[in-house]
Image (cartoon, rainbow, N blue to C red; front, side, top):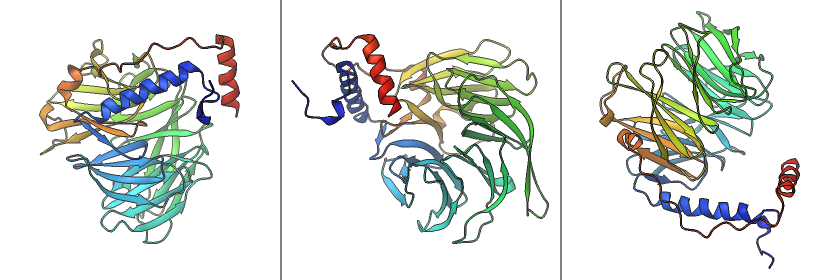
Amino acid sequence: MQTANADNFFRTENDIAKSNVQALKSEQIRAESNTIPLKGKIISFVVENDHAWTAESGAVARKVSLEDGKTLQLFKGHSGPVTSIQIYNNFLITGSWDKTIKIWDTTTKELVSDTDAHIDFVKCLLVISSLEILVSGSSDKTIRIWDLRFQSKAPLRLLHVASGHTRPVECLAYDPQREELYSGDSMGRIKIWKLERDEDASTCRITVLGENQRHRTGVNELVSTRDGLWSASTDCTVIFHRHASPEQPVIIKHEHPVKCISLLPIQESDMLLFTGSQEKIHTFDVSTVGHEEVELLGQTEAHSLDINSIGIWYHGSQSTHAYRQQDVTIITSSLDGMLRKWKIDQLLSPQPVPAPSHKPLKQSILTRDEERELEELLESD
């Protein structure tokens, strides 16, 4: 019998069954008390105070209360998916597939700056407050430095363009102590740059200090700490590049590509690493990384589709060095359109999502070679 759904014409029965299972799993997760369902698909987010600011595929950015899950503000104006988001003082900064960077007043929701920033997709943004600059990375393979001392209704002033990458720039990080900028691309290369802003702030120089090629494929996220740089990659690894021993990196292997990471200092000397790989959150003790074996503390089935961003919500008084477990909540997002909130003990003693009840998958009427050929044809469209 033929299906009436045109989307199913070129899908195998196994593919359809898998999608049905994912839909059932999504419904179960949506009903959980720690879930904030949104109407759009989340690409990335940042946490500021008690709010999550989301960049979404529907060309919008959103301010969400982490207390009650309500949408407080919606920012519309991009003509393509919003890929990256930053908060700077009372401003929201967004980058998009439409190649622009937009700045919004978070009090009035007014669009105060609109910049044609790149000649291809804007993939990542990073605010460096101490230098009053915004750094953007793009599919056009460039890094651009923008002056954040902008005038209302005027485009951002371009300070510098760096073109050392040969593939799209996927992520950025900054070390304020070393005054070093790090950029990762889809080839797996990490560039190290020196940033210097003139005393009169009229220009900002950026020079290459080195390059790291330890990843085999794309770098998805970078996190800078006092002791080194952490990187997550599609090659199924997280690598800690130690400043003290640059030739002896610590490699944490996963079964699947790692899309995102976040680090949390606990008490005085303990450190937890959270990684997002497919639908799971992995929690590691990295307190003695480089000296002892990294310990996997837990794996948690978190979403029905791949996790794409992990953030930390700090409650009450904050310390610049460490936090008590009860003062923090881990936030995750996914293309399943949901934000989820996790207390640390949930991730250390995870409760698996019950497997959706469904009929056994039928054997495909296509051979394995025929399925592979069909996939290749669809990918070439």
